[in-house]
Image (cartoon, rainbow, N blue to C red; front, side):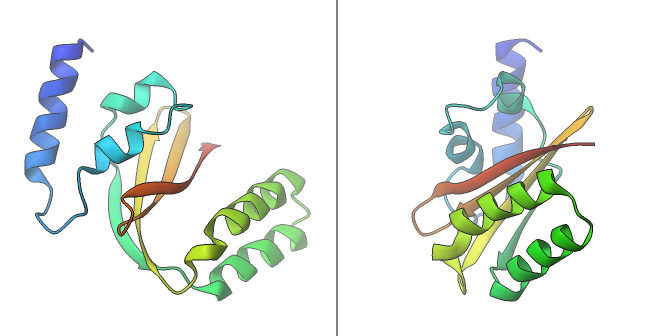
Length: 122
């Protein structure tokens, strides 16, 4: 996709977003310098808000242990460490699916920054 097409697509998506969303979500995500370039033009699969519940993080960790999935447990531990300061707060979650991989971004709407992101192979 050409850069001009990408910019036009981003502008259309920004115009379609609800006015009560914090800042420009795409700009916030692009501040993560270690992201692959295809993320800059990728469509959002889903954007929602959720209350970060301590029970959710505990469940994910216990589920990964029960299934004896070391890579998943490591990912959950990193997620728990990054998100622990935000327990009880509402975060904006952005999901992006690309062929063979999907990305999840957790954004703090107050500071308008990505507090955690990760990818998983499909």
